[in-house]
Picture 1 (tube, rainbow, N blue to C red):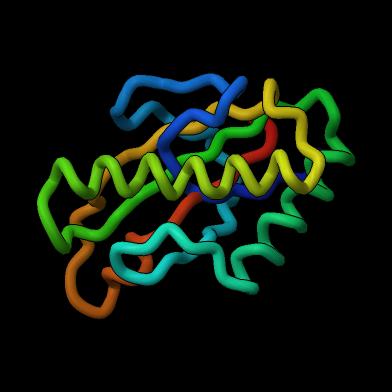
Picture 2 (picture 1 turned 45 degrees about the vertical axis):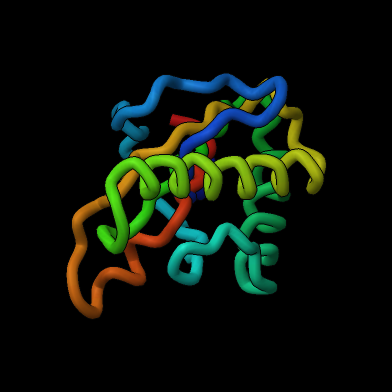
Length: 133
């Protein structure tokens, strides 16, 4: 059985496939999120650990494609959140490449703001990494 991890982000890393902004369907596999602070694209130690784990799984599945989808909460303007989601995706995709994943396996994109409110907004500030379909 294929090991699959998911993280969310939008953007394209040099050499990675870059999709137009939007919300293409993600593979229906479990997702492991990488969370961000409000208005931030910085990868904290927990995020780096999650990404490193995903890179290890990707190494075990050398033929599997990787989707990185970024998101933002609904704080701020829509255009800014679209850009933020792409930048978060880029940060995660770049780190995957740094951790040894071939950039040609990665497709990255942003989905902008997810509309989650209140206490749940922290869950909207995320990137999902999906390995395989």
